[in-house]
Length: 246
Image (cartoon, rainbow, N blue to C red):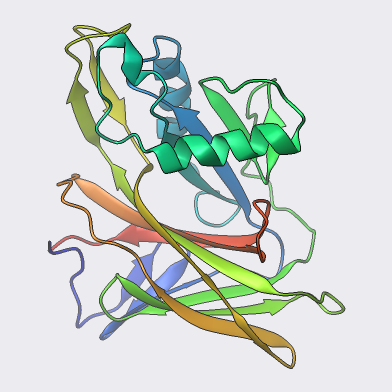
């Protein structure tokens, strides 16, 4: 799988591609993590996915917000197996439901910085003035990432980094279930994800993680990286960017 052209520099989402490396970084103010829980077997999901797809053209992409789409597997029972769905993503949504003291999960469902959004996403392109710290991620191969998080002054704790490989421009012909016969378009699909604890030293926390590879030949790929308090879901800071294909 070839994801990245190296050896020259140009702007790539929230960071800069230098010779031999990808560098992604947030600003000192908060960048939001927007999660969509969706399924190819859910007839009400395509409009929500279309809303997420329109964010590709937003000036705030990777700077004010980082979008990820988790495909859940509980709609597979209707006869169509969503190839992007994972029990792990269903478990993630169920964990949110427990935190919100909700009795059930549903799709489509938007989550912004760990908070349920039943009234819709709205605009995310306006800068957030909340200072949460600087998050930097550097990679030479788009798979293994060196992470550094410098929390805002006075913020203490144990941190955990999370990185997801995203697929965009995906077209999927549905052959059963509620969307039978439709040709669905997907963007920011989580293809694989990895988490790792960060080691705290003085005013920074650092570590490395490797994102599992994916066999999905998506027309375009990106990476989303965020940091949380260790063991928690709500993000403190996020960054991301497109990966240039060879």
